[in-house]
Length: 451
Picture 1: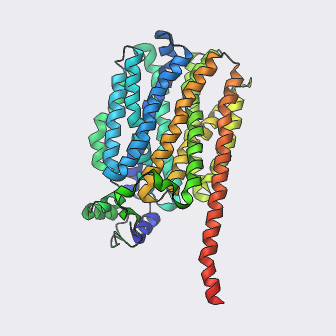
Picture 2: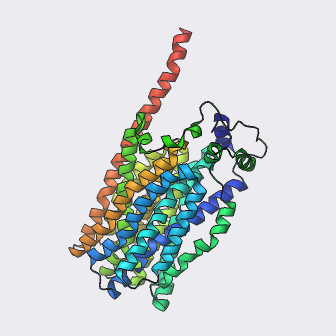
Picture 3: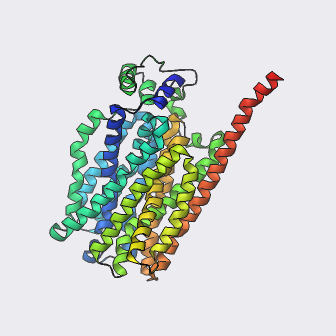
């Protein structure tokens, strides 16, 4: 897009167009979060009914995560070629349809196949809605809006936990999967109001559609050029790819982002998959164990929104560094013999600093990568991170099979938080140094000219 158009979007006042885009993207993420977390909700019942060992249960949970890894990479790159709306529609059809079918599974094999295919959509939709929300958000509140939107993931997790408590005792574990058909039913309505990426529309030559969207972003200022000499959206689609993520100064930040995504998702999925079961084994009832999952997701919402607000006013990588330190400390506390109030507080902080930080990581990556490779960058970071999501449930299953004391399980889960803090600390100093070097190079010609 032209510099003038980018400036128009950056400086636009928040209006009904932004609110509608925010609500639609948040709704998609709510459904996405529900379909993902629902496995952790039914896990204790499945282990009992199907006589699963902890290792088998961890492996079964990883089927969806393998799908998410592939889906994030494939649909992240595909969106830069076919558009975000079509990619999002395909992903919704996959995760909604096959999570619904999951309720009819009669054995581990059928269950695992459905979870894998649903995972393709769950993983693929995330980088696309983040990129879309980031593209249309005013600059001064971009981090906050992306964080609010992605908090829908935790709302979906809370819905899964709450519905699990209400529905499983009466109608069985299958009932919570039947609810997942709702986003597929609502898909035509979502697509009717969800905007396409402006950069994609301009590349496709759909200027009339692009101008209609611009008129909604800034009704009083629509006379802006759609292209310019520095238009990064004009880059040929054949030039998109993972190589773009390692050009110039991108290599180290990309590796650090991948590392942070991997370790953060490991913590997130280890906790969301095994927290109810670990607490159940520690003597808490199933209802109380699911309450811990609710508290974890409430903390995640608060952490994401507060972190996004801080990031807009400070520096998002610096905020993430401190959040990950808090994650390591709070997860360690969760396994200790502490009063109930302190335990609930530690779980809430852990949710804020793990799930909340994962949401902020998407915002951080979206802000770092330029528009023409943003979906690719987000897709690869998310896809690489999914390996951590796969390792998390497997690690939890292995630790549970070893019958370790409760606090040792949580201490192991806390180690990735330290690694994340180191990665984001280095990312922050690299960005700071690059910004200082750019500032020096910009000022130097003026110094020479004045001399």
